[in-house]
Length: 327
Image (cartoon, rainbow, N blue to C red; front, side, top):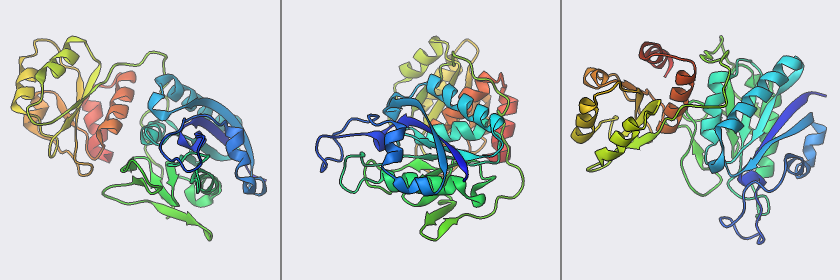
């Protein structure tokens, strides 16, 4: 029988409420990974699963230390066991897409790493967690999933880490991949994915993650933005900045003036947009201010990329080369 590693981090999939009819008022991260497994007895007929509890938190409370632990355990597990079929991670949905993208940039192995969560707590009527977990395991075991990198399985859909995002606060179909759609799906007849061709780029495959990470805030564009926020970030000496510009990433005149007036060295900066889909392209006027386009990445994923680039000691030329080539 094949073997999988399950890394549990908490979230709604492990959440509990005193009332089975309550979908919104619950405590996330109550049940451990073993309890999640016990709720899906069908898994015993599919695979031997080793469970490790990395955290048990609401994913809004996830820390860089949790990311560091996840990356270390996945790398160690793949290195130690060449017959391990893959890894499944149970995760809260609020920041699931960020963890998936982080792992996509760091884990260099063709074996599947599959993240899964739930929109309803484990105690709810018609809880979606057990079926999501079963389908995530089915995907992780499938030969079709090899080579696709990090995947997210929710509501029967299989999404790639780069595009997937949470698009709704409620409902089991809260995840989508704007601009591309899901990579495939899983149902009673199996896992449906196209064959992955060639090797994928893993730009930070050899990066060792430290305990201390740089500060990278996200500044959000809006009508008459307060430039004091930007100035405060620069005065604080942040390692990087992500601008969530209006439209195709546009900054206001006040924000541009604040950048132009800054007397010190500007941090490494990425320019995303608040629209929910669509790319931010190169703009020579923005690049003169030190702003690099984030391509199709949403602001939170642009921040993940910028964090890793800073940890790796990358400069703006290296970062723009990666974005131009693949994002």
